[in-house]
Image (cartoon, rainbow, N blue to C red; front, side):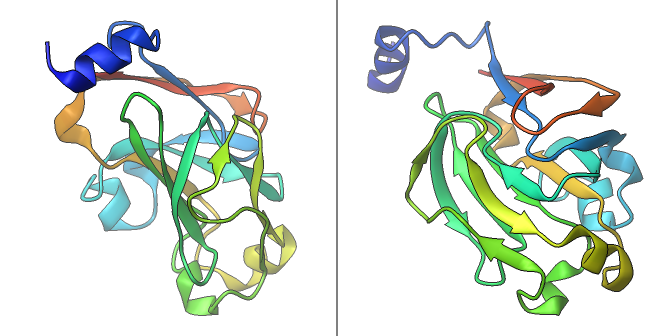
Length: 168
């Protein structure tokens, strides 16, 4: 057992148990393969799920640390205590709007709890201006993942389970 494995065990993390990721935004779950962007649909950046949002606040899907909030506030990444690296990207081609319609609430390197607000979005603006508001939530360190269990249906931000990720 390595140092990281020992630390995970001492902190109570179990690979078998998996990391539960709640929805980062209220809406309806969409299979990642149906995202209207081949980078996400073909799982180039990782596997996961997407949400067709009805809400206007992106929240932390789990406890962890925000590793990056993109300059245009259209996406953020974070890492969980047991090593799941996730990436939440609001809409498709929303980076082209250069930050318009987004309001950053959290900061990079901030420790967050599941449900903490990260970025507020102007959903009506994006429905009019963006290619799509479908919001991919992907696991970017798939080489470390042994299994992902994906949910379906309607989800409420920070409350409803989106997927469970098991680390090797």
